[in-house]
Length: 293
Image 1: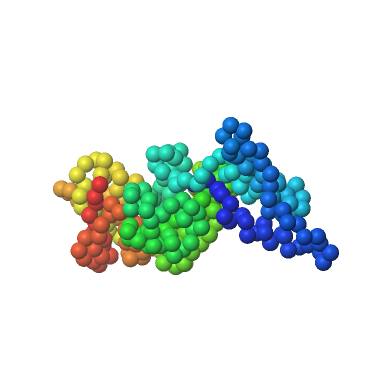
Image 2: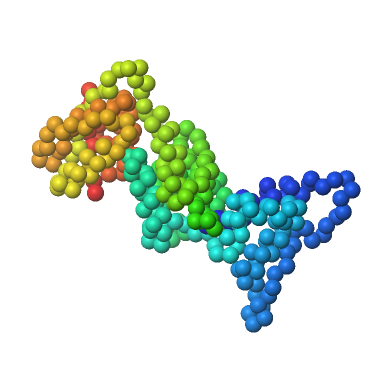
């Protein structure tokens, strides 16, 4: 979604209280002038951006403020339009970059449906604040305990800047990042989620060998199913080795060496919606799951 003004105004307004005891009251400190289109009787986006730039200079007392990245982002927002959600169809490049970044860390990434129910509950302006309670409320229908929200903007020099909020049962982590490409920003977001998750599930090795766990996956009806399961396992960072034991009927059995406990491995597998634990899923160091497409 494109960057706007809400998160910029408070720090900028704080500059206004730095006047000396002999300061003169300025009644137009927060106003700017913009030309009105004679035919339309409206202000163009470029004129609105110029007026906003005037306000920034007045409040800060220096035109140097216009060089700051966040100010450039605010002016770009005034010129280019409204905030919007990243959608798989309308923002395919950015969405694909996110999918690749999370896939490389073995993490499934699920996006909202963007249906009427989502639209009624969650607008881009409402999402912009990234308030924890609001994010949890609108995500409740998806029954997910790990939530990632982000806001980002394309800068004038072609780079991307963004803010991310990762909410999990352990709390909230925030990240502000900038990269030469959107892929860089997406990679930083994946790391924000993957690193605490790895520490949560990892077991201190102390030089010990990785634990061996047998995993049985039912519902393997084609080579495509087999390949997807193997790719999923190979992308999970804490799994060091995957060996196929057998494929019988529709069940794939593999031996896993992982730097985590059996329960920790189960937690990682269950992040993927296609892996559903079967009844008695954890028995004597073995895991049993149903694979669904």
